[in-house]
Length: 88
Image (tube, rainbow, N blue to C red; front, side):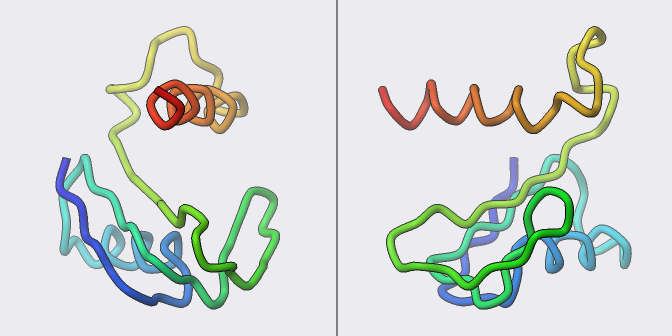
C-alpha cells in the first residue's frame, strides 16, 4: 500500500477522493495526517482535529474485501482490524 503522509490537511477523506477521482493514485492507497482541519466521518459528520489523534483514509478495491462482508458493515470491520494492530 502506498501511503501519503501529511502534516496538515483539511480532510484526508476529501483529499483521497480527489486523488482517486482524478486518477492520480492506484489502489491500495492511504492518506495520513498529523492534523486535520475539516474532518469528514461516517454519515458526513464534520469535526476539527485534536492533536495526537489518528487521521487516516484509505482506499482498496472492492474485490479485495471479504466476499461475505456487507458494505454497510465495512467501517466496523476496519475499525476492528485497526484495533487489533494498534493495541498490540
